[in-house]
Length: 133
Image (cartoon, rainbow, N blue to C red; front, side):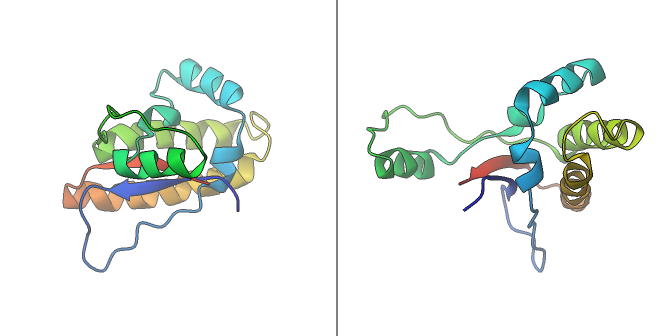
């Protein structure tokens, strides 16, 4: 199984599947991404990561650990917050295709994120990224 960043919606939208691939962006160098986000003066994608505390506790337990009882609750973000970051990085990579290894695939992930975020903006639904292992 491959690591991926996927979008979680706070509430479902009838007939809408928020599926995104998210594998290329999850495999990108966090150090290189952080430099770009700092240069662009936007929120890093990793700052949009959140997890359902019950799912996180189960993951920790399955990995053989003991989950703390005071895991943080899920954080939710507006579509506009995500769109600012996604669009800035997408534009940067279009102008600087050698800025990141696998920039084409990362750009494809960003285009999928943008499509989902545009739709949830219209619906007024909050979101966050989650990590799939």
